[in-house]
Image (cartoon, rainbow, N blue to C red; front, side, top):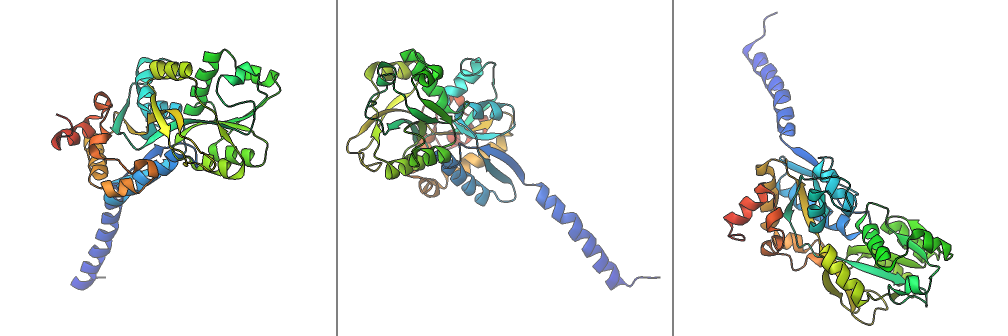
Amino acid sequence: MKRGPRKIVLFLLVVWSFMVVPVASQSEVTYKAAAGQIGGGWYTILSGLAEIINKHQKGHIHLAVVPGSGVSNIATCSMGETPVTMSFPPFIIAAQKGEDPYDKKYPDTMVIASGFGSSAQHLLTTRKDLTAYDQISKNKVPMKLTINRPGATDEFIFRKVMNFYKFNYDDIKKWGGKIFFVGHGEAAQLMKDGHGDTHFSYIAVPGSSVMEMALARDVTFASIPKELMNYLESEWSLFRETIPKGTYKGQKDDIGSLAMSNTMMVNAKVDHETVYKMTKTLCENVKDVRAIYKGCEDWSPSQAVKGVEGLLHPGALRYYKEKGYIK
């Protein structure tokens, strides 16, 4: 049966439409992006950054945010399992060298941008016999501790605290205490219902889970003794930060804490053009970045490179050099 010219044109249009759609959809590349635990600051920050990139790079780049943790994020990023991630610069250096907390080298994690606020230490408790870190071992405090799971920054730093004061999880149990390795949301619930009475976290300020705990219970924020502060600052590149009074309910005074800068990272093998586009998108939508989270309110492209110049991915470095943020 012969087809007329009109039918042939219609047939070709239908075939063409089926051919075009897959090509368009295949041009968008999706990357898993590992944040922190749901309910934590990192999840909020990376979700916001991903939303900006997904909006402005629609059809080209899509970031799918998944839960993660500070220490393990470096390894999964380096291996390509989560090519985009949030973590802290000191862990990149440790991973490149294969030093604690890593048992081998993970050399392929680099930086897109830093300075999205900072994550700081919080040790809060309902116990009257715990007002400073050194009292845990001195008073053999039988605390019911809620802390993030092994592999998280929180848990790693707390082990360093324990090592400094020469006690461990077994000692806490011997003193009549308990340890709950849980995410931020579960920790808040355990503190609220009384199953937990002490919480350690390394979380962006203000931490929503810490806010929940302070609203539900009368808590004390334990101070960091000078000798511990000096140790963590010199050995682990933490920097001193003050959590201003009034950040949490019942917090009448400033809290002297230690912090690390929240940093967006990427696998070294992600192509330069893709990383350039992600960097450009964030830096040219500063207002949107600042609206993500209280800790991002002062973020700027010049701050994005502070302290991480030698860790930048070539695609990010290209953008910052073009704009003069790096000479």
